[in-house]
Image (cartoon, rainbow, N blue to C red; front, side, top):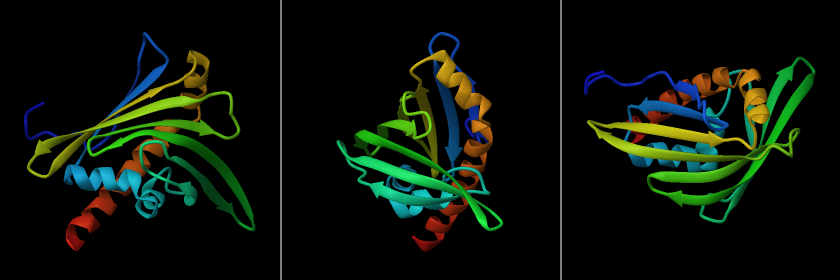
Length: 169
């Protein structure tokens, strides 16, 4: 990979030593905009998850010591399927976010997520994510849930959102 190559598709790896999933992805946007898209509830709801889901923010206090909750909604005709998640923000810094993540249907499986943002120059930012699960079994369940599709599609939507932010200034 050369200095001009960018990871425009997420690289997702299961750590063989610990029950963690590592994600790396580059975004053609300044670091501050990528961080804002992860901490501003209005922006976050516009990109998170697979394309067929919409997101309702139920609680959002993106600062060190704050908490969050959101619900993903899939409309299937007259019926809706919902998936709810919650967690706590442990650290919210310009280049790093540490939070817990819990899927409400698996309340015993709390994940510790760390996102680190690196300015690559020329308007590019690299996101390194590390999701540490409470067990290899929990990690396996998450990987089996087609997590990768949600991550890839969410980041595609984030690319579009960030491009729009560039145009707006």
